[in-house]
Amino acid sequence: MKTWHLATAATALALSANMAAAETLRFWTTETQAERLAKQEAMVAEFEAASGHTVEVIPVEEKDLGTRATAAFAAGDLPDVIYHTLQYALPWAEAGILDIDAATDVIEALGAETFAGGALEMAATEDGYASVPVDGWTQMLVYRKDLFDAAGLEAPTSFANVEAALAALHNPPEMYGFVAATKVDENFMSQVLEHVFLANGVTPVGADGLAPLDVAKTTEVLDFYKSIAEASPPGELYWDQSRTLYFSGNAAMIIWSPFILDELAGLRDSAPPTITDDPTSPELASKTGVVTNFAGPSNPDGAAWADIRYFGITADASTDAAMEFVQFSMDQGYTQTLSIAPEGKFPVRKGNGDDAEAFQKAWAALPVGVDRKAPLGALYAAEMIDEIVGGLNVAQRWGVAEGQLALASKLINSQAMNRIVREYIDGEIDAAAAVAAMNEAFSAI
Image (tube, rainbow, N blue to C red; front, side, top):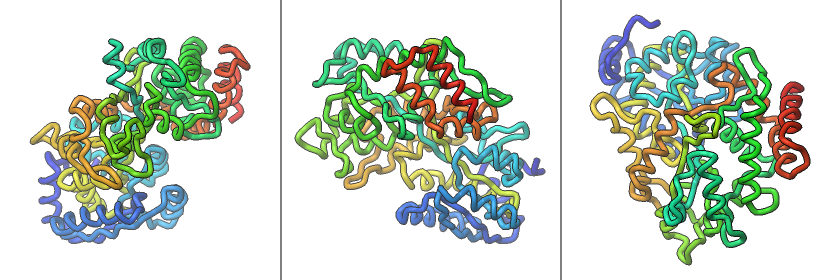
C-alpha cells in the first residue's frame, strides 16, 4: 500500500500539490465524441488550475483500447490514467498494467462507503481494488406504471409479478404484455438473457472456470423467458421493436438501457414517443416506472445487470499526481464528469462526507436530451431516480465474482445461449434438452 492515507479528496489534493512537483499527465478516454471531449477538457482545466499539473486528454476508441494498452505496457509507455470498461479491470490488474495500491488508496481517501457496493465489488482483488469506479448504468425493466396501478398490480420486481401482469394486461394487438428479445444474432438478446439468468441466480461459471448450469434454476429461467416471449409480437425482436411498441402505447413492459429515458420524455426527434399526437410530450415518461433489481423464484434477492466504467491508474503513472487527478474527478469535478452523458452515467458515488446524496442530487439536475434538454429530476419522480441509481449497489455480471469475466464474456459473445433459448421458446426442444445443449455448447467454447 502507499504510505499515505488521507481522509478526504480535498485534503489529498491540497497536500500532494504542495509536496509534489508539477507533472504532465496523459489521460486516455473512450469518450471520444467532440461534445464529450469538450466537457472532459473543461473538467481537466479546473483540475490544472487547482493542482498545478497539466493533463493531456487523449481520445482512444473503445474497440482499440485493449490492444493499445497491451502494446503500451510492453513498451513501458502506458498513460497515467485510463478510463476503461469493466472487462479490463481485473485482467489488467493481474497482468500488472494497473496499480492496485494507488486505486485502493484513492477509494479509501474518498471513502469506500460513499461508493455503490456493486461497482466496488466488480473491481475487487485480494489486495484491494483494481480501479476506481467512475460511473455506470443499470439495465431497466421499463413498465407502464399507470396500467399497473389501475389494475392493482405490484411493480414487476420478480418473475411472478411479471407473469401476473402478463395475465392482466396482455391483449394483442392493442396491448402486448411484453416485447422480449428474440433475435438470436443481436447482442441485445445476450444482454437481456444474462440479466434474466442473473435474476434467478444462474451462472455458467465458477471459481475454477466453466460450471454446469443448475438444471432446476435454469428451467425456471427458460419457462419465464418463454412466458414473456409468448406475450410478445411474433418475429425477430430486439431493441428497435421494444422501443417502438412501448412508445406507441402497445407494450406494457420492455427491457432497455437508460438511454431510453430522454427519448421517453420527447427530447429526441429521431426517436419520439407516438402514444400522443405530440412527439415532444413528456406524457409517456409520466406514466412509466422502472425496475433495476429483478428477482427469480430461486434468488429472492435478485440482481441488477450493470455496465460500469473505471479510472485505472497505471503501473507507469506519475502515481501521486495521477491519484490527485482521479480524486478530483471523483469529488470536486465529479458533477462535471457525470455531465458528459447523464442519461448513461449514473453516479457510483451518491455523495460525500458532507452530504450523502450530494452527487445524486447534482446528477438529477443535469440536463439530458438531444433536440431539447431537461433534467431527469424534472421528468421523473424522486423514487424512480432512487431506483435507477440504487441498482448499482447490487449490480452483477457473469464471471465477475468468480474471477472469470473473460470466460463468461466468451460464452455470452458466442450467442449459443441465444440460439438454444430461441429453440426452446419455439417449442423445438424441451427444457432438459435446452440445458444440456447450453452446457455442451459452453464446454466447446
